[in-house]
Amino acid sequence: MTVYFSQREMVVPGQLLARGMYRLGDNVYRVGQNIYAMKLGLAELKDNTISVIPLKECYMPNVGDLVIGLIIDIGITNWSVDIASPYTALLQVNDAFSKPIDPLREDLKKYFNVGDYIIAKVIAFDKTRDPLLSTKEPPCGKIEKGTVIEISPAKIPRLIGKRGSMISIIKRELDCQIVVGQNGRVWIFAKDPFYEEVAIKVIRKIEEEAHTTGLTDRVREIIRRLKG
Image 1 (tube, rainbow, N blue to C red):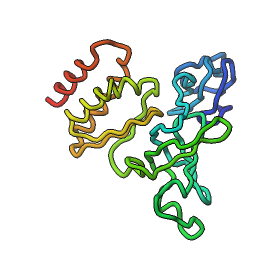
Image 2: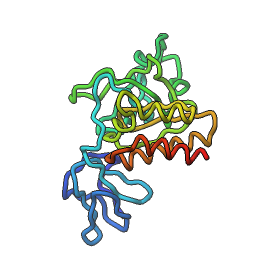
Image 3: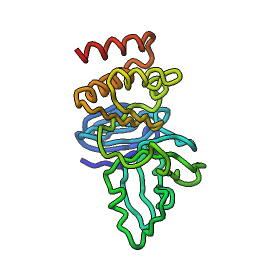
């Protein structure tokens, strides 16, 4: 069993992705032992399943976007951040905190370590270099509690709702904090763990039914039913 791509590598239709008895996910097909991409997008191997995330569902950074990133590497003066995009973002020490930090004297791991989730803002991106992030302004910073989930970036506007109506219903009814990243990652925290689980189920339902009408009323009903 062999994989011919790196995680979230951009692939094109017909490109050979793997050979062997991997399970088939979305937008791939098998010919004999070989697995090929069906669409232009990001290739992914998860739980022994090969999939391609279509490019139209991938997050493309825009300056000013609020995103939720995952620290994947630490350099001398910066952190590399996975923002669920074809581009890996960089968070420079100077853009991380209001107070000055000397990276040559301090261990950057004590601030953000590999595996940490952060809330950040995109402050620069022009497709000729990796996006630059900042965590200086609220609500940015390290995520210390709660749950981070991923949905399709294309469904984010539906989750937020007109003038924030949909997300406000979830926050109010379940007494929880929610930060929605434009990159499709969502942070949820409730003092009551049960309410946090309900919020996650509701968000998943919104993702599944984003194309339907009357969703706001159904969300209210789902929350009432799950709350008992």
